Image (cartoon, rainbow, N blue to C red; front, side, top):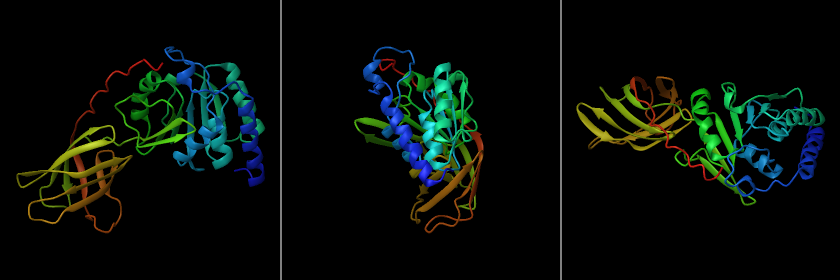
Amino acid sequence: MAPLWRSALVVAGVIAFSAALPSAAPAQQRMKGDPALIYVPTPQVVVDKMLEVAKVTKDDYVFDLGSGDGRIPITAAARYGARGLGVETNPSLVKLARTNAEAAGVANLVEFRQQDLFKTSVREATVVGLYLFVWANVRLRPRLISELRPGSRIVAHDFPIGDDWKPDIEEEIENRTVYLWYVPAQVAGIWTVSGGPPGLTLQLQQRFQAIEGTATVDGRTVPLHNASLRGDAIEFTIVLEAEKPMLFRGLVKGGTMEPRGEETGAVSGWSAARQRPQPQPAARPASRKKG
């Protein structure tokens, strides 16, 4: 990572460059009704907020799908020491982004490629940045969910990833909206639990990060309470008749779960294995009225 004095110059340079660009009015105001994807730069203050909300660190690999002048990966590298990749179809913008990375002193950390963002693998990313219309975000959604590891972050400016995938975090800055999603582990299905009440099984239903389900012990079935999922971290409470509530906090690793260490008040020494997965419900078609 660059020395602090150099980072300060880099950031100042990025902000100055932002001011010299064409108006960064919200895309939905400038291209309403037009589904074409064209370049509209994200204001630097919004870039800063996106990276802050995503909690970017030097250990992250930040992808920007539709990277324009490269300011998201460049800022992530300059401020946090993160690696970055930007993809863009416009060769002039790819060239500009590379020039900006050189000027910022982070060309060793970031790469810019001329390629189709809809055909770009995101398997290596830990953070993905988006400033695209809703229809484009929804088109990318199956790839984002299937390729990104659970717990990876998707951060978007102004446009959500469809109406049915609610963001985990939503913040406003200067009349603009920044959305953050943690990619959820896939937990729908039947699970057999060891280390809890004998014969305990779970049946979980899932829609993105929203989960609910039931627990069955000795033929008795009760609903799960306070079930939640953030990335690969799962939590739920089981209340059996006339018994103390049992809090389970775990990490999902593919077809298994295990405790998140020894936590006060939570059941310890348990594990779970999935016996029969269930597919996540299909998403509703996205409205194209925003772009």
